[in-house]
Image (cartoon, rainbow, N blue to C red; front, side, top):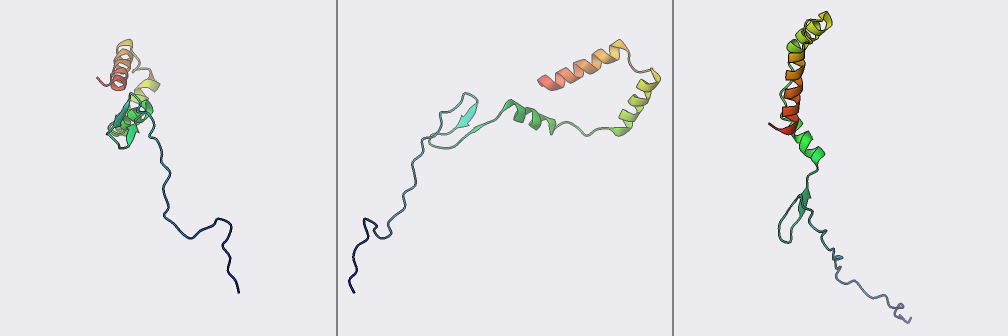
Length: 93
């Protein structure tokens, strides 16, 4: 019996990984020389801040809801204060 070579197929050899060029660093990224980089979106930042918001005080919510239904709660000063507080929370003051 005669064994002949197969058309250019050789035995096993070392496997070489493909070389990738790293993407260019974006202005809003953290990068180390030769390492990975991380980009954090504005949505991710807001979601992170939402985790630090205190739990809802359901007793206070029920009290305010009842006052609104009776018409005793909505005054221009209270609405202005609520809007100011929400704005301050959103912009991080």
